[in-house]
Image (cartoon, rainbow, N blue to C red):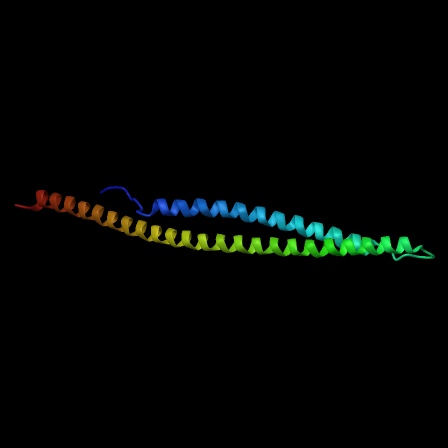
Length: 144
């Protein structure tokens, strides 16, 4: 009897390698998300640390402070959009990984079932050969 061979092994191997590639892409997307969230936290910290002007200030100083706060608010808004896009990218990669993982697991279960059926048949063949050998021996000892 020939050795076990899973007919869809190439497909299963492809799905497994694709799964690994997608996991690496997911990890990279998570790193990018963390970086963008770090930048956002930095900009927010800068915004909160800005002290309110005290004492007498010239109009130019007030305008400059207002412009700085407006620029920080703009950066914060822009960075929030980047964080949202990064989160979306992570979700998309996670969905892809889960899909490919499910497909690979289905192929793994099919392979396991086929292997179990193969091993069962192989055990039956061996038992049949043992029974035949025992019958021949019995016939030679007690037959005639």
